[in-house]
Each structure stands twice: as C-alpha cells, then as structure tokens.
Length: 189
Image (tube, rainbow, N blue to C red; front, side, top):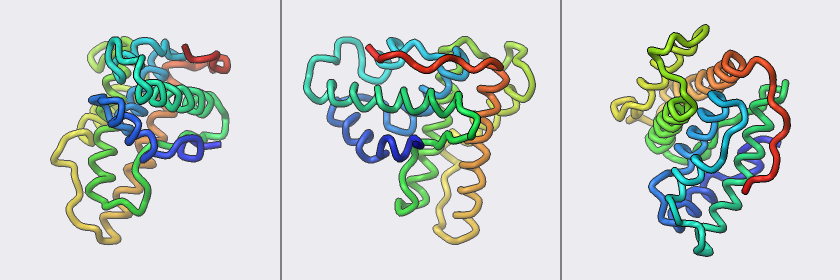
C-alpha cells in the first residue's frame, strides 16, 4: 500500500479546504514526514493542531479531515519504516498541469522543512551526514521561482527527477536521524 493508494491527493485537498484550514495536502504530508524524520514517531497533537487549528475539531468537515489525516499518518509512518522504500509523496496526479504539480512539490518541501524544525532539526545545528545539504536543496525547491512554465517532455522529465530526489532524500533523512526503525504506529487520537 502506498500513500497515494491509501489517500487521494484531491480528496485530502478538498477535505482540508472544507475544514477551513490554511494547509494544503502536499504541505500537510511534507510536514508529517519532516516531523516523523526528526522525532521518529510523530506526536500527532502539534501536527493536527497546526493543520486544523486549535479548537477546530467539532465540525463534521474537521472530523472528516481528521479521519483522513489519521489514514495519512498510519500509511506514512509505515512507509518511512519499511525496507521497501515505498514512500510516495502526496502530490497532484500526473494529469494535473506541471505548474500546479511544481508548486505542490515546493509546498511539500516547505512543509517538510517546517516539520524538521518542529522536531528540533536545524540546518545550523550540526546535523549528521547529508541533512544540511538536503535541507538547502529543499529550501531551493520550495521557492516560488522554482515553478516550471512549460509542459514539454524535458520539463516533465526534470520534474520527475526532482520528485524522486526529494522522495529518496526523505528516506535518507529518516535513516540518518532515526537509524533504528520505530515501532508500528498506535491509534491516532
């Protein structure tokens, strides 16, 4: 089971909008991955509060969003801790315009960096291995000028290479920051 099979990008994006959140699906998943890489097994309370906002848990839209986020949490933690390198980034599908997918990738990277920071990982903090370089690369990808304007095959291939670089970098960050795999997740409250 991959994250895309467990949860559709558009479904979560719509649920987040219905719950009146400021966070999109890509940023939400990046944030979760960053927290999990930094802390091993994420404390879901700060993640959910950041996404839903304090006190936004009573509406039906917020509850639906919470349920989808619980699915995302379980699938993400499973894939960060498996040996199959099965993690996939939650991004718009290949049928979406390249500019939209590139912006979503930038938002994903922005969320990941924020998640690392929430987990106590800072670029200047003397992080192990390639973490500082990955953080700098993700920062560059998250910048608005990174958008692709053309929908040609060269741009499409470049986008796919960057997505794969980000995916593998996340797995490397997790391995360097959490060398012993964490146990399977418990229920999300």
